Each structure stands twice: as structure tokens, then as C-alpha cells.
Image 1 (spheres, rainbow, N blue to C red):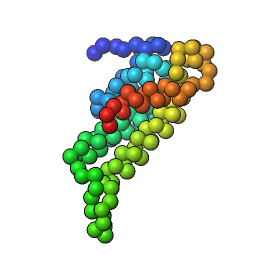
Image 2: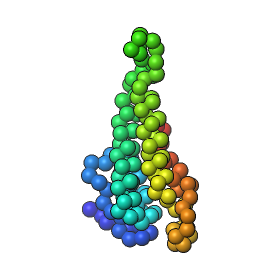
Image 3: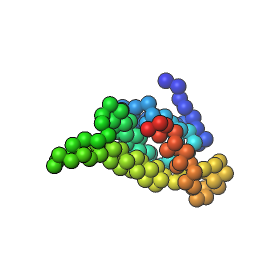
Length: 128
């Protein structure tokens, strides 16, 4: 196994069982940032959410967008709402990491910006 290094040293191994997109998110963030232990836990939670999103998205590809509700009425497939909620949770989790948007902010230890969060989100979001 090749040891990856980032701006601040070796990249922590990705948690076991992560899917491709989640593992890539883990790697991308850890290569660019040095995270504390508590931040690594938040990142792991975000990566696990990414895996759930990927599974739900794949399931929704072959499912109807409109299904029958409990009273026989047409309603949006519940997976649509679940996807939206899980995507929002990933955004919140990544937002708590306050990722630096450039090397200068990271070196200076100044306030981190939302641009890096948006970049990380866009990397795993893809066509979903």
C-alpha cells in the first residue's frame, strides 16, 4: 500500500468499508488539510453519509419518482426527500470542518472559508 502524504504529512488511512466516492472525499480533504481527531470523526461521518447517498441514488435510478401514498394519492418517492436530507447533512458536517480555501489561510491559521467546503462537496456530488 502506498503511503499518501499531504500538505501536513502522512494522510490517515481511510476508514474500512468506504465506497469509492467516500474514500476519494477522505483522501482529498486529508491531503489538503491536517485534521484533529475530532475533525477526522466528523469527516468519517460525512464519508459514511456519502456512501448512503450513493446507494440511495443508485436505487432511485430504477425507481419511479412518483409512488402511491397511504391514501392512494400520488406522492413523491420517499427516496427523493431522503436524498435531499442526507445531502444537507453532508454539507453541514463538512461545514463544521471549516476547511481552508487556500494555502495561505492554512499556514496562517486564519479563519477558513466556505469555498473549500463547496469544492469538496462538488468532488463527490458529480451527476447525483
